[in-house]
Length: 356
Ligand code: SP5
Ligand code: ZN
Image (cartoon, rainbow, N blue to C red):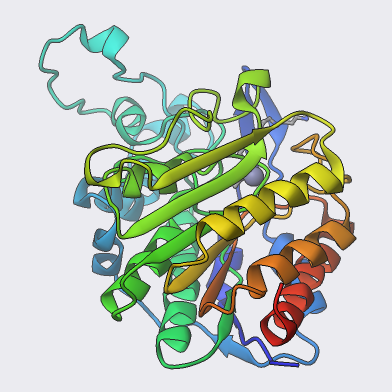
């Protein structure tokens, strides 16, 4: 069996969400640092552990605007230096005013001076808080994905990036959905830069990866395919992930969305994985946005997929025989998380050998 190197970084533990403000209520964050060790303990045995190369903020400019990167890099320190200790007595940057079209009304806004005003220019929900260590962890998560892409560009058939916090909801200019920096998009761009002409991103996370879709929306050289719980049934990210979204401009037809009903289960979920695998079979390299939150035990989705289903999904996508970078996305049930990721990796490794 081929051995998949596991790329990780201790710095990914430094982001502590503490809580998410969900529909006005502070709920305990589910995207916790303990996820790193739950996954590492399960996938580590028998695989080579590689510590991620260090990357600087500039590496993120490959897929993100400078304004977002600079905000993320400096926001926690600016919050600590600001009046917030006295004002609200808490250390997390929380957006307050969102400059959506409803506020702007077609007028050119002046950039806000207060950090709690500025935060809404980059953060697009109230669940994704920035605190001490968030930037260091997000940069390290990107480093995991970029290092895994380098290993594959250098000839490894497959590499797994234990990226955390996750990335697929981060857009060119914004963060949200527990994501700050789009790790999978960075891996895809890095494979393009290494000479792979057509790169596919297949996103099996339970949620639609609106950030990855946005980054490659008008590009034909990176295809984006996702299966996820139907946003029209009331699920995050609500406004994207519908079947009619297929890309634009040069990227027309290079985006594909397969929204699934609540309670879908293995059979229909795997049919969708299969459809996306066939759709990307003529690509030169593959990035898998490997969220395992479609699993039955997961608190964040109703898709009811089993560990056997994730194993089979790995077989299907590994069976394409493409150089593959597997990037961790969601998955929040700590007791089953490591087993689900391992099931996918073992499936992908087996698929590489025997085909679909
Ligand atoms: C990467 C990823 O999987 N991001 C997940 C983004 C969706 N989060 C939605 C959270 C919805 C509210 N959950 C609160 C549960 C309260 N019991
Ligand atoms: Zn998810």
